[in-house]
Amino acid sequence: MTLDDIQRIAAFDDDGQGGNPAGVWLGEALPPAAEMASVAHELGFSETVFAAPEGEAWRVRYFSPESEVPFCGHATIALGAALARAHGDGRYALVLNAAAITVEGRREGERVQAALQSPPTRSAPAPAPLVDAALALFGLARADLDPRIPPACAHGGADHLVLALARRASLRAMHYALDAGRALMREHGLVTIVLAWAEHDSLFHVRNPFASGGVYEDPATGAGAAALAGYLRDLGWPHDGRIDIVQGEDMGMRSRLSAEIGPEAGASIRVSGTARVM
Image (cartoon, rainbow, N blue to C red):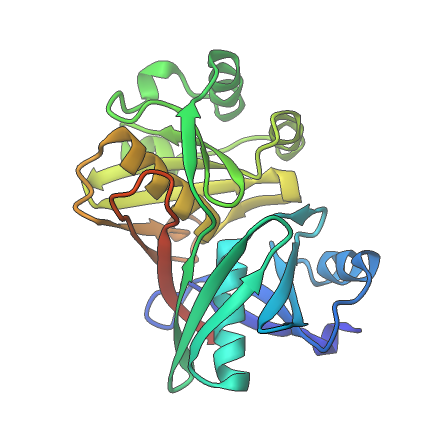
């Protein structure tokens, strides 16, 4: 397996621009883990997804440049686009390391409409020491937080810390030291930190540091979107069944994600967007 075997697909793009690049490999059997990790590191995208047929489903693993992750939303959307292009429009069953999910792909010219059903969601209040450490990492204070959405540890296939900010300017000014962020996230088992600002009840602007995987910031994070949406349901937020997320705009890679939220506590979240071959 070489880099020439990897498709490059931008997931959650915004009308043909932006989005989050993912590597996608399709084959008859998954390569050894060390080989997948090496290729993902060499490619350098925030995630590369590897998929091979397993019965009626596809066995899937995700690798960042520095580590394997249990679930990645934007790479799943990219995989849905690759499967639709290779095998036709439809819904595909995926078997992850610790969950079974689905992804749908529907071709529209050079772009693909795709949607995933996340693993089950859950959330809990974030411990005060973790919140204090994260605020210090970003140079923030508790007064910078939105009191309507308390800090939480949220899961939608991977673990995230959710920090809702009271002002758009605080989100725009995000900065942190990568090594310190990596240490914090790995110490607490976090894949990313979700920094979010609510423009209104159903529209959120998000930035997503991914230092645990060696990436300063992701321009679109489907797993984070699922975790945030699941937490908002647990919180009783007036989402009216769906939130839209704008991400990546502060890094010049504007992306659009939609998350549909059902009424059942702990149920999966449907996260959708478009993808294009790069």
